[in-house]
Length: 147
Image 1 (cartoon, rainbow, N blue to C red):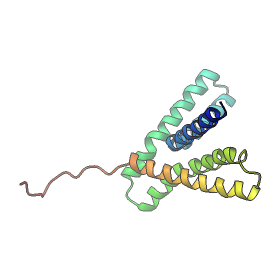
Image 2 (cartoon, rainbow, N blue to C red; image 1 turned 135 degrees about the vertical axis):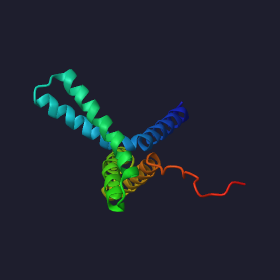
Image 3 (cartoon, rainbow, N blue to C red; image 1 turned 180 degrees about the vertical axis):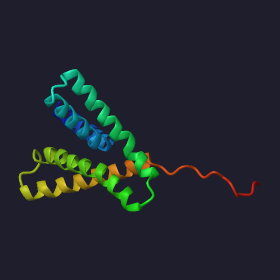
């Protein structure tokens, strides 16, 4: 029975880590949506209106981020937009890893070390996913000889 509990715990940690890596790209749109909800609610929009406004703000952020990365010409603008998506994901990865690691090791130094490693890993994964969402368009094929 103890072995089964250990295997289930390992599987649960694996599933939660996979979920964290998969959903890291949505950290910025979620933050924008929740901020818009609290702002709209404090202005008196009511809960349904605030939720609708926050969902729209999050969806717009998620839609225009990769679009801006694809359409922008200067590389510095692409890097700024990418950093805007990666930074909240890295912070979320740090805190999620810290939440897991603090139960496994007593040393504060090692907790911070592994939390930073987890945050960097989630940040890199978010960067790769954002870059994949904003893939370059396919070449038009003009000027190529057909065989």
